Image 1: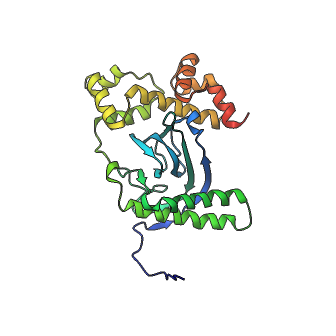
Image 2: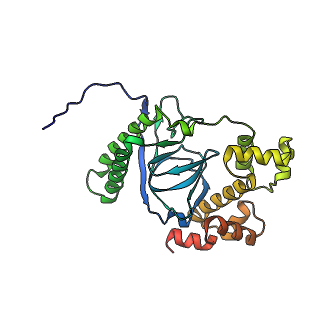
Image 3: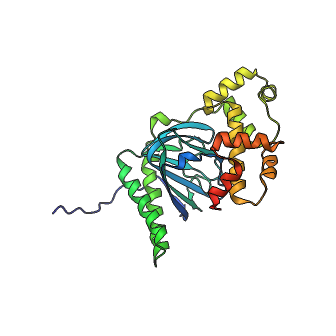
Amino acid sequence: MLQRFLQPGASSSLVVERPAELLYMCRVEGRHSEMPRAMHRHDDCAEIVFIREGQGTHIIGGREYRTRRGDLLIYNGGTLHDESACPGAGIGVYCCGFRGLKLRGLPVNHLVPEQGSPVLASGEHHDDFEGLMGLLHAQVATRQDGTAEICHHLLQALILLMGRLLERPDPRLAAPRYELGQDVRRYIDERYAEALGLEGMAARFKVSPYHLAHRFKATVGCSPIHYLIRRRVGEAQSLLINTELSVAEIAERVGYRHPSYFNTAFKKVVGVTPGSYRRRYLGR
């Protein structure tokens, strides 16, 4: 029998000033690729996503990442993110949503600094993360006495284990320097419901349309117009899920003056019409 004793060790680099409160857990199977979740954010909570299987493309905070099995994705509160599975590969994930976390030196609901990498390879901790996420998901589903306390401690363990990865981020995911592409991206995020075009944005930033498009794609990973469409569609998805607004009202809110254009753009990104998406998501 091999008996091991806990030895005092170095404290975690994460100093928790206020612990996180678990809001939800979900396990998404490979069929997630049927309906991508376009650009959206959660202002009142943060999320940790663990990729169990498959691979995908994620835009987080204005940068595109090619993600794969074993990666952990961090969505700070208020950070825009876009999720798509690779065609034919599918993607399966655990997603953990929480609020109230306060780490020393960071805003509430932030696990990484704004310029830190939001994608980390789990490496030798792969089984630990999958086990913790799986146990959290199972406990949330039980609704037995003591479940809330068990989930609370599992969540704190998950966050502290994340601290080990944050101490040595994957060099392939080093944060980029911010420049013109990120300035344009922020401009689109703030004005996506307005009538934006490449020529107008180029004039606003006093560069040629070619230069703006080239710098944007080099930084974000897609063209400005492609990003604008996904930003609008992502906002529309949130409104379809969380409000009773009609499809025509939602179209106008996100920048489409003609519902037919909105329906075409939405179906091209998500794969179904806005009405079908609402019915399938809400189970109606």
